[in-house]
Length: 303
Image 1 (cartoon, one colour):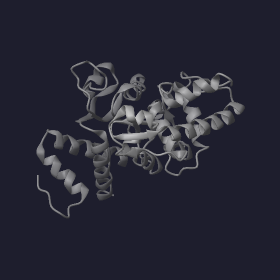
Image 2 (image 1 turned 90 degrees about the vertical axis):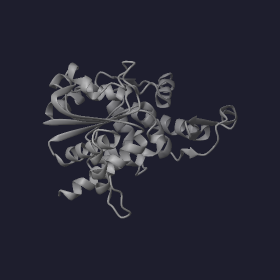
Image 3 (image 1 turned 180 degrees about the vertical axis):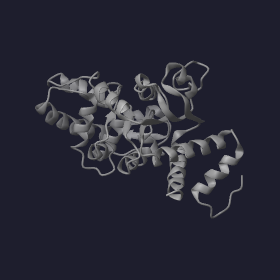
Image 4 (image 1 turned 45 degrees about the vertical axis):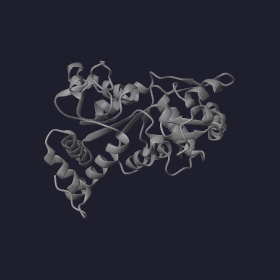
């Protein structure tokens, strides 16, 4: 590999490709595959986001991908939705507050590795989301998770919000594990005195329609867990995804889904025979911005 002071990001990525099949080579292959997905109008891109990627700094990246038409379906955790809303309601994610967790608790702060939140911001979140839920419950008493998130997004004014931009672009967001989050806790508390029921099965109607209507599906999987499986399993009935990129730090030895190589999905028909699959091992908050920047640069070069 040769690095020069004035090289473009696409040139840098191409140099990584000269390393063969090691980590740098995988970054190149993932970048090339993502560029191909973005350029192909027949490919529907499923973006799967697990882990604390919104508090980890990727909120605007995901939001911009939606605005620019690079995401057709977003599948994520309730936690990432919660943290998107936290910022939409004026809260922040803080840096360099120390690692004395007992002291942080006394100060009303919660820690996510080296990212921090304030309980004061969550109090605002609780007040604002309750007001939104009251508006939604006044219109409907039973809703799918996807429709609930769409309705919330239509009531957000923050231009950098993932939920707002998805609602504006009519991009569906699925969060099958929404109850396992602060938003889920607020939903439960809200239902103690209000009528609102989530129909999780209803999400599969719209999601399966997207899968069956798509000529091809490409999955971009950041982290593992439930969002990864939901993205892959939703394509099971049509024979699996046509292409996929996975960025994970999980290991395969324990048999966990998060650490499973993408090739394993072929045995379940969650990835097609002959599908283009690339796994990159590492921190998605470092690697995905690099891969996305390279993919966008490569896409411009071929236009």
